[in-house]
Image (cartoon, rainbow over all chains, first blue to last red; front, side, top):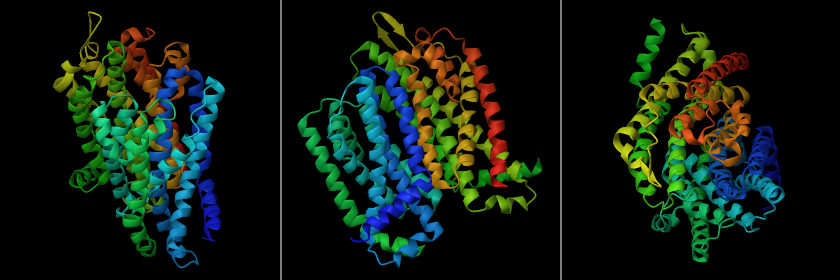
Length: 237
Length: 263
């Protein structure tokens, strides 16, 4: 793991070069204006949705697009012969994705505190780390199973419609409790429950199950689906 | 003209092979299933009549505007893909000019997008319209009563003008697809515009600050038609006209900038 630091700094450099960090911060600042303008009750509905979009949907799509671009550039196949392990390369990308999600969350967190005098539960930080990690792994998985950029877009759209739509409906209170309970096994729904629980009171058992679901999906997908195929994906170029 | 007809024939032949067209065709069907089966079933569980009313309005205006956003994102990535793969260089040596090809693609996606919006609104109205009618304190609220066929067509035409605005904006600003996704993240704010129109502070004069966003005026027009009592009395037709003029000006400016960016 001695190369991880170098790989992460390289990822940060890339994120800055491709304006992922700059635009991310800019968007969060725009959200701050809206948070300042709306009443606290609406903030409690909108903030979990913003954090969910940033840490779940955007983490998955940004890592997916980034991998495609790197493969086309040929940098991934170069990295394959560099003196660092596949796991280190994979982790550096996931960590970068988590950093971007944490940055946006921090800005939202501070703006809610400043404009509404309300502190979001500090558990939001570990939850965002877990949610962004899981969704980054899903993003890599989407890349691994897409032939070209267009098929990645289609796969991603299917992923959003099938998995993220129930979570979005639940976050605006449109899903009945029994459906919410069944769909808790979905990565998106579990992610949404964890994030919402930091602003809206949620049953402890729901939080614990969601926590278990997010961790379990992350470990299973990483070990069984992503890690074994990632080296082959890098080398293919 | 014959060249564009050939391009159209090619697009029709590849309708299922081209992933972008595939999404544009499948999207309204999925959304229609959601607005006619899934959402009415979920609405039955909402007990408060007032929140039911605003939830119905949010559903209608968010879903109606989603197609333009998806179309814009797809157009942006199509243009960025062509930019990355130097496809415009290849097109420039064919009988189709680069500007002609871009215009064709924009019009093609725009028409698909307008049809999607109409299918979604009319389909919801025909197959599940009654399920969106609610009784609030003895007063019947029917969101579709003020939405005539003409108003729906005008809305679809103007709302979808922001599709090329979004596509050209992302494709001009971004140097590659990753930057494109970063800008798409910024554009996600546009999806929230219709919802913001219903939030208390934005119901008054503050909402006009959102007027710089390309989908504001069409969303405002739809809100006026669907939920007049929440609107500030701004006429439907004026909002539609401002939206149309504003978006056309933006398309012209962005189109010129995009052409410059690929030269």
